[in-house]
Image (cartoon, rainbow, N blue to C red; front, side, top):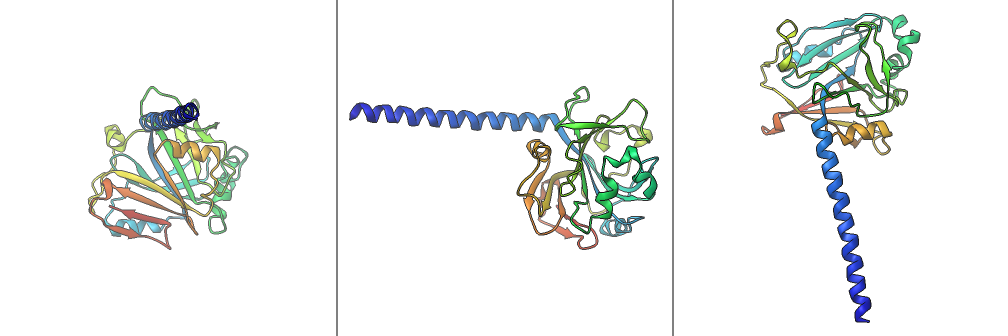
Length: 257
């Protein structure tokens, strides 16, 4: 009886040790992922012209340069911070957006159905190290017409899952405060926001993330929780001031700082 009790304690100890090792391995993997990848930018699909940007400007954000994506059928208005960027994106040329080359991105379907169950967001990661070409998720190479011929964007293989954000990673991503002088953007905002320190997606489909979405969550750059509607919470500078502005329903965005 005593021998059985000793064996049982040893077994329990071994199981506890194994659980501890697994937790340690997960912690190490999580730390490595956090050191490997950075959040580059978020896009939110809008109506043509993104008039919602005017409300962000009234709030105290300074708008940066905009761009028309030649051959992709989209255009944007952007707000840059020291470490990342917020992009309001819309379809300006339906024919280009539905072309054979662009079709696999599902930008057209995502945009036209964003008020009918499709997730209106895109989440972009970048490598934390210039020389590292590791991709966070399984992907396919998207050769965007507006980029140089030899450069491609890694788009996650769940790009046709419209209940999740479009996930992609760019090889040329940098912190905006490290842009070259000819590409520099306004980074100082009247409201005083500097760095995005939390990106949390709220989604009705959060209960069963795809492997690609889970891979992004494992980088610790994005959080996900269940909700009745799609929106994103962006936290700035550690949210130490305890302030928050909700831009819904015009824009599915909450900013906290």
